[in-house]
Image 1 (cartoon, rainbow, N blue to C red):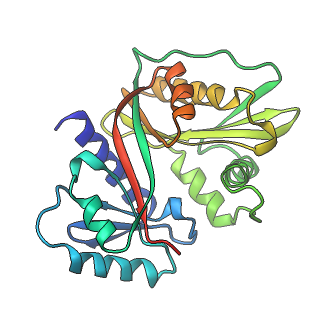
Image 2 (tube, one colour; image 1 turned 45 degrees about the vertical axis):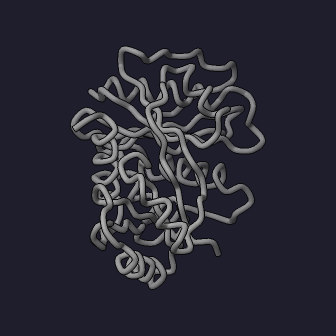
Length: 257
């Protein structure tokens, strides 16, 4: 199994640990138990796609819709090269094409923390208020203006996921400004996810700084390969400063409306 295949395998395992798994061969649907945000609800192919998959796709859409979720895929495009055309023919649209980037302990290049930025590193032993701050900051950074207050379920799930992973909240002038985390490692692999900055604090290098600290925390805990996906070239250049390099591409596809 090459590195690309190992990363896709990790994505399946990580999603299965966090979400409800619904087999719809040759796909698996992953559903967040109570949050309909599209980034938390998606399907991944179980392996290379062959033959006619129109009927599985019909059943897959039903599984999403009966849970009031948007039918959606996240997958490494080179491992299922014919799937994109099939999805387009079945009413899906290309939501985004992302760059899948990897960093190893040897390539990791820490960056200096900008003046005025302080960090709190969260683990499963952190307080519920710290976890709530992380959840709220993350959601408000990804969805500015959307009313949201972390539920008790969100807080409990976050603390549970931090048994092996870590989350970071960055503060500017005492205000939560930026967040990032890495997922629980498996076979030396972990994913750096959720790097996001509150709108009014952007363009200050906070994203690079939190990426650096999250990577440092991951490598200190035995991770050999840390990976992430990014949609914009600008964000890709930020991650390159910390030591990430381009590996392959991912596709995010969903049904509009």
